[in-house]
Image (cartoon, rainbow, N blue to C red; front, top):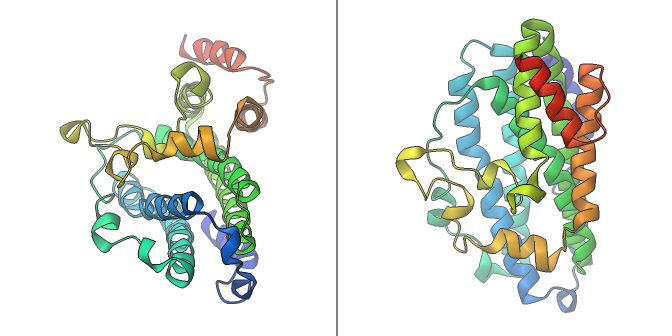
Length: 274
């Protein structure tokens, strides 16, 4: 089982909202209105770990190891929402998300192949690591800069944990797992072609609710994500290349192949499929 060791490693790295967030260093003149609003949107988005966890537990009934790991992942992701809301509660209480706004992002996801979902969320963690790193650089207020740094490090660790389950899946399922991971890897590393940032929170996940079946579509401002990325934290081509590079490097290591471009990964996918 992977869960016992993952629990220990994540426990050692865990930060405290009381001891590791420098609340007393807050500078009100360094927090703009637009920055504060993005914190609210990210807090609501992080709350969507709740329906994601419900999805993982439903679709992995035969995998108690991975389901147990969800207890750690869910705790840490909900903590992300909580620390962002705590920041607003202390310094911009009028922007604290309502319970209704939080509950709006809790909806049922359609069942999906567990291997593809695993890869999808691995890619999501790689991307979120870079998004939060840029957010920390963009913000000018010291406390929220530190919070986004903590969140970015958590997302990187979560990606590493998912990668361990992906390696185990290849050991158990062989080509089936490789094909699933390559297929989703090509999709998630192709944001430049799709014209939008690809992340689990802005993908359609419930046909019956379309088009209100993405997490982002249920936010108070459904358009905020692309504005945040393009005009605020400025997640440009250089930043995107780090996401793509992270996905390709990890799959190269996982498969024992060399993928220097998305095209090379796609060729490998076609080879597996044939």
